Image 1 (cartoon, rainbow, N blue to C red):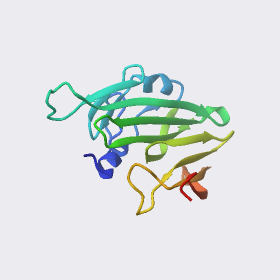
Image 2 (cartoon, one colour):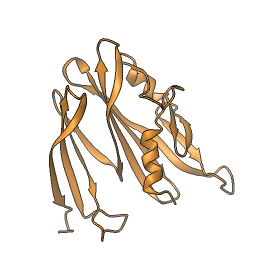
Image 3 (cartoon, rainbow, N blue to C red):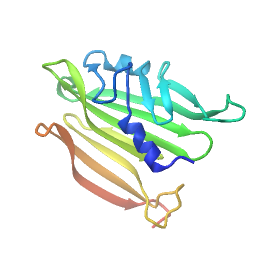
Amino acid sequence: MVSRFSVVILTSLFLISGRAAAGSPVLRCDQAVAALRNGEFDLDIGRVRLQDGKACVHATGSDPPCEWEWEVELTRTERWGANQRFLLVVVDANHLLGSGAWDDVFVYHCDGDRDEYERVFSEVYQYGAKVELGETADLWITAGLWRPEDPSCCASRTRRSHLVWRKRPKRFIVTESQIRAMKGRE
């Protein structure tokens, strides 16, 4: 069974095109979207090379050894904001043997002086996240919110957070958060 800790490693060991995970991967502002579809990700589950945005990972020590354990998919890449200066990347890791699925949400900012994207936000969301982009420098993320008594399959609440770009300290800041009960779970 995969723990929440293992999934958090997905965020911290993110690697594209063989670059070291010590810092953000180098993504040229004008080539990032195409590079991501065939990029390489170094995840807790192993090194994953996407081919046209998808990959499967074998189970460790599985019998038979060809059984798939993880299905990884780049589900969204989108540039937005003035001069397309922000890049949203969503990678879904689905555990096919039954412990769930997670969306890794990454947001990059294009540093115009270097013509490179730098990562300015990342978070992992169990069972996915809905991301709505603003017109200039903001976004909304809605995801499940589990109370202690909720089963792992079913969050009883959702949290919708509004994130706004702050030039200093060069990151997205949560400016508003709304928690709502799921329909039928009030």
